[in-house]
Amino acid sequence: MESVLPELRSMWWESGMRARASAGLLAVFAELPRLVGQALRISWRADRTRTSVVAAATISAGVMAAFGLLATQRILVELFAGGPTPDRVTAALPALALLAAATALRAGMGIATGYAQNGLSPRVSREVERGLFEVSTQVRLDAFDEDAFADDMERASRGTESATGLVQGVMNLFAGLVSLLAVTVAVIVIHPLLLIALLVATLPNAWASLRAGHQRYQTYTAGSVRRRRLWLLHRLMAERASAPELRSYGLRGFLLDQYDRVMNVETDIQIALARKVTTTTSVGSMIGGLATGAVYVLLGILLLDGQIPLAAAATCVLAVQAAQRSLTTVTLQMDRIYTEGQHFGDYRGFMTRATAYLPRVVGGAAVTPLEEVAVRGVSLRYPDRDTPAVNDVTLTIRAGQTVAFVGENGSGKTTLAGMIAALRTPSEGRIEWNGRALSEWDPDGLRARIAVVTQEYHKWPFTAATNIAIGDTETAPQRDRIELAARRAVAHGMIRDLPHGYETLLDRTFADGQDLSGGQWQRITAARGFLREAELLIMDEPSSALDPRAEDALFQAIRDRQGKATTILITHRLANVRHADRIFVLDHGILTEAGTHDELITAGGRYADLFSLQAAGYANRN
Ligand SMILES: Nc1ncnc2c1ncn2[C@@H]1O[C@H](COP(=O)(O)OP(=O)(O)OP(=O)(O)O)[C@@H](O)[C@H]1O
Image 1: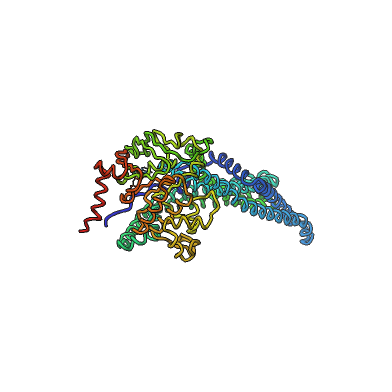
Image 2: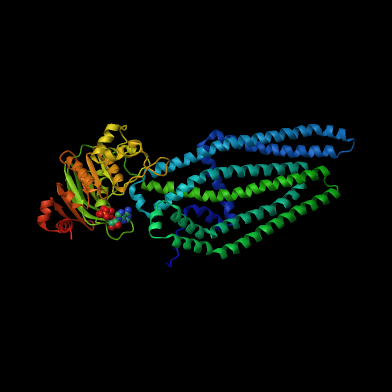
């Protein structure tokens, strides 16, 4: 097989890194104030007490650091003074006590900051994540038809994780800046000339580490295509979903070969980049080393010249070391804030854009029991599709009827049913419930009266009982109702045979979890639809995976509703729609035929063709 994986779309989780790699240092500085402001606002909203504790403790720790340096200088002055050693030590004792106190207090503040930050992170995370889920569970279904929306939401999820990183980054940056400031103040107090030494020692280092950070991000993004392909290959070779076909088609060699190609490709670029980064970091370290050397020379000159005392020079060496440490923190945190800030920007952007997709309803009339559903000149066009999926359809369904939508694949049956269930909004025309547009009724009231069993049902990772009970979350789950629904959907016996019966967890990813066959899952989803005894039940391909006996029993249960409740049935097994009160035939989104089975057979149209084709399949066994 001669094939190389095409490039995947760029991944949302890399956008922050990419932004940082292409941003110049000035851009990073320019964006910092806005990002810091955002971080402080989220932190304050999530937990005011802890935010205040972190701020107060960080400032106090900085003040203690300055005191510590001043005390150190005092100690050195006393120790370097003339006179017998015991006297000098005794003279240094008060300053020593002050240093011990400042160090202990600083450590205490560090502990307080640690505790407060640890408590703050989960709260920030919760605040941001909850906001996202509130929106993501509320947006209209058609939002998911937009390609950009799903991508946008994925990026926003990454953004929620970044919120804690952003807040932590800002707090660490703050701590770094405070201690840098403390060192500067202490140095100026000891001797103003020492400030020059401090600047010489720290500025080149700061530049070098910001540049090195930039290169690190560039290296990362240069490898991103390779990583994306590896990520895909990893999933294909290690996940459960692809495991059966991987074996049955013998894809092992093919995939391993793809892996080797991906691993080999781009190696040259990686090596070239690695060289570049090594050069920069080496130059950075050289500049840093030279600067530190220059400081010592400068201190020596000042000492010899009698400008500063020995104690001050020694303290300056300590101060330079402390300042360099703080500066490393500051530059690292600036990179981090910028990167996380881009992801958090995705989150904020999504939250703003998503408001356009929130349901527009305000209130709505209390829903009256179903008398009639009328579809009037309804069309729906999916984004980026030339032809409408449903094209100017008009039909009426009366309460108590069982109607069927039939037609070939892609003829618009599911789309039409989705609009009747108020899950999708027509692009043109309107759908009425008892003579009033769906949008004018209370949406919760409508939802309570309509049950939908979808073709692409979801396997919820809950127990069998819960998988049925979620068909009606308004009432407390009652075992007898669940069992009754399961019996109607021919699921009761099969659930009883599971290791823990109704309490069996239906997800293999959990300990003791079980998986079901396609047909067994379909029975469970049908039971979910029956549970609520909805006035309008929409069943989209409810029997495609059922064995003949289960299928027959399910359609018997659907027929039992006839005359009592309304059912819309979508199925390709035309034998099952013979009893429907009305059959609507769709072709390329257009309603082409409508009538009872007998009427449509007599008319000899598309339905009659499809029906006789299927019937012939059963009749001619050879
Ligand atoms: N979310 C979507 N985005 C874009 N196009 C879609 C989407 N869902 C369906 N379509 C397109 O709309 C048309 C109608 O699809 P629909 O699912 O309503 O058909 P159907 O009659 O239910 O088909 P089937 O018998 O295969 O279930 C098809 O051409 C399909 O490709």
